[in-house]
Amino acid sequence: MLRLRIKVIGWTRRVLTLTDTPRPDCPDCQGDGGTAHDYGDHNGEYAGTEWEPCPCWTQWAVVLLPLPRWPRRTPPGYSDEPPF
Image 1 (cartoon, helix red, strand yellow):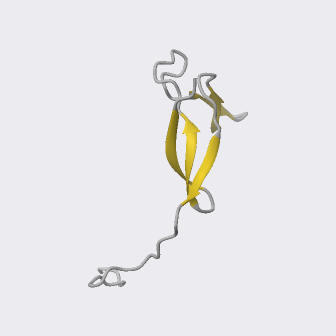
Image 2: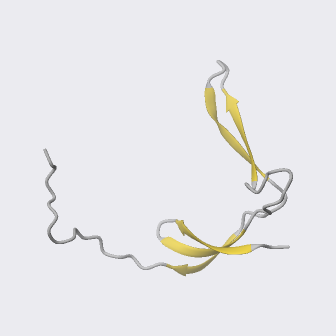
């Protein structure tokens, strides 16, 4: 059964997507959607993290609506110069 939610993600442009939600009472992932496994290089130093998705959900997303780009501007009365 799908547990749908609306989520804002940032690709090249921010968009609204419809995604699946991990099962909150899943005994394997405790609602996180998967398990992270840290791994090391040949010296035993940290080399990264691998993500193993849980079968209680799917990692799909359907784009619903691209969000408009709002112009960024400095509010009146603020200075662009550093305070020191």
